[in-house]
Every structure is written in structure tokens, then in C-alpha cells.
Image (cartoon, rainbow, N blue to C red; front, side, top):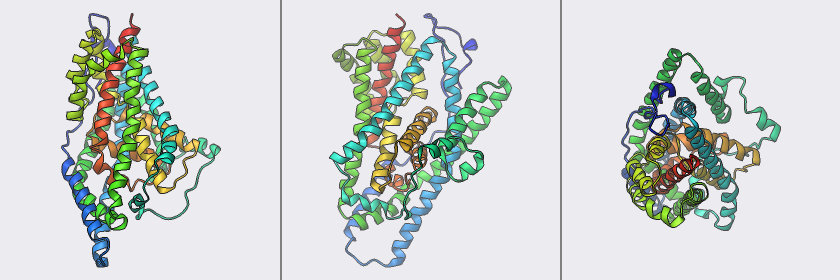
Length: 429
């Protein structure tokens, strides 16, 4: 947990030193096995797409996939609640750490909001230029039928506050739930120290318990993904592979915006020559691409900051904090996944629903802590989709290819982290 600024001490430059974030259980996920199961399932489905397979085989495959999907769904609300409380209380503590921390947080929210707005405005336009392949419809066979009810602006505003939080959870109304737990996290930081520690300890234990459960579910992901992919292959044929490639390119393009924005921010607010910044970032970016982990890239980011001659007191304060609570690409790329599925399913996204998605994406990105890509995919995008009325069923297959867009996520996050350091460091002059 972040320390209280009065207890944490000062660096030689007067910047409070902040300890590491909450420690959550470590889960190793069968990423390669899940991706292989996706390819194998699609391949076999394509192979047998013209065959008359027995109904019991198709029903069994559908049942396995449905059970695995529901096992993932049952953990979303308690895990999101716990991570929101932990992440936001940590951010409040960080805001108390001094002017440098507040400048950092202002930049964080600016980048996150810009990413969400860019995706909400650009992705629908991009899909009109490069439309989703017709074969992608095979991903939607298991969705419930019926027209989606699009709320008006007054209904949207009324939905921001739930009169019964238990009922909201039962109905998976994610926006009022997210707002409630955000306020709850802030309230915990205002409690007496002993009470606040007990509450945070409870949510810390809840998060770890949920992570263990979701880790178990994801360990059998190859089985569930294979069953679902087999059905998609039967319905879509070889076009399913083209649909996945289209999805990967479109979502990664939204992360590319954050990567470009990092260079622009380093130049405009950090006073960095773009070529010099790009050259200094190459070692850290190489580590980011190879490890797909911002945490593993931290030493390389510190080295890049040193190459740029940024103050060590600034970089050693901001970068660990950025790794703990800042995922620059989250709103942009998570909104991209939700909007892509919405376009796939024919769900109309009104301005009110887009705002709801951005709000949830913004808060979720702060509370997602440092989780493996497969877990953060489920935890972060599920609530956004639910808040906008977008079906989450296709997500269980898209998580299998997350390892590819995750390269862009980490690359852009690492580059933006150092860009933010340059801006904070320059603001101290």
C-alpha cells in the first residue's frame, strides 16, 4: 500500500518517496496453450464446416463454452469492486504526496480521457472505411435475440445513481456500481487510520481470492476456447481467421494513437527533441516488446530517463508510481474492443452510452493494478461492455488473441510513462 506522505520521507529534491503498490497473488496463465487452442478449434471447425456432425457433439461443445464463459462472468463484479477500492485509494494517497504527484495525476487523467475520446470518435469512422468482414458474424451465434433498448439522455443521467446497489450488482449495471465503489474508495481514505487499514485489508483479501478463482478458470481456458472456436469455425469457415486479423489491426491502431501521443507529449510538454527521445526509448521499448510487462521494463525506463538527462529524483518517483497506477492505453484499447463487438453485434452506441463507456474505462484503468494481460482483459473490458449494453460473449474468444495487441499496449504504456516523466521534470524548472 502507498505510505502516508507524512511518514514516507523526502528525497534530496523534496519529492516524497512512495512505496510499491498492493501485492496481489501471482498467476501464470497458459497464454500459448490458449492461443493454440483457438487456432486448432477454428481449424477443425473450418475442416468440418461442410460435414453433418451429430447434434450431441455440437450441443456438448456449446455447453462447455457456455459454462466457461459463466465461470468468468461470476468473478467480474467482486473483482472489479475490490480492485477499484484498492487502486483508487492508492491514487488518493498519491495525490497527497506533493505537487509532483499532482502534476503526474493531472497528466494521467488527461492522457486517459484523450485516449477514450479518440477511440469513441475515430473507431466507428475507421470501421466504415475498413468494415468488419462478413465472416465475423460467426462469433455471434450464441447471443440472445431481441432489439437492444437505447436509453435517452434523461434515463442515462438517472442511471448514474442506483437506489439499491445490491440490485444493481444483480442486474450487472456497471456504471452505477463503478461510481459507487469509486466513492467508497475515497470514503475509506477519510476514515481513521485503523478503520481504513481494516477495510483495505478486506478488499485486498477479496481481490486475491477472486484472482485465484479467475486464475483457475483461465487455466482451463484452452478447453473453453477450443469448444467455442470449433463452433465459430463451423459457422464462419476460413473467414474466421480474416475476422481475427481485422480485429487485431483495428484495436492495435487505437493503441498506436497513444504511442504517437507519447512522442508529442514529450516534445510539447517535456521539451524533448523527438529524434533524441525516440533514440533514448529504443532499449526500453525492446524490453517492453519482448516481455509485454511494464513492471519488467521499469529498469529500462529508468535507464531511458537517464539517457534523456531527466532528474533521477523525478524519474525514481514518477516511474514506479506510473507502473503501479497508470496504463495509458487502457481506455483507448479497451473502448476499442467494446466498440468493435458493438459494431459486430449491431448495437447502436449513442453519445450517452459512449460517455458511460469512457467513464467506466477511465475508472477501471485506474483500479486495474498490475495484472496479467488475460486477466486485465476480462476485468477491464467486461464492465465497459456491460455499461454500454454490449454483449460480452465474444470476449471469451478475443482474449485468446490478446497476446498480440498486448505488445502494442505495453510498448505505448512504457513510452508514455517516460514521456510523462519528462513533462513532470520540466514543470519543476
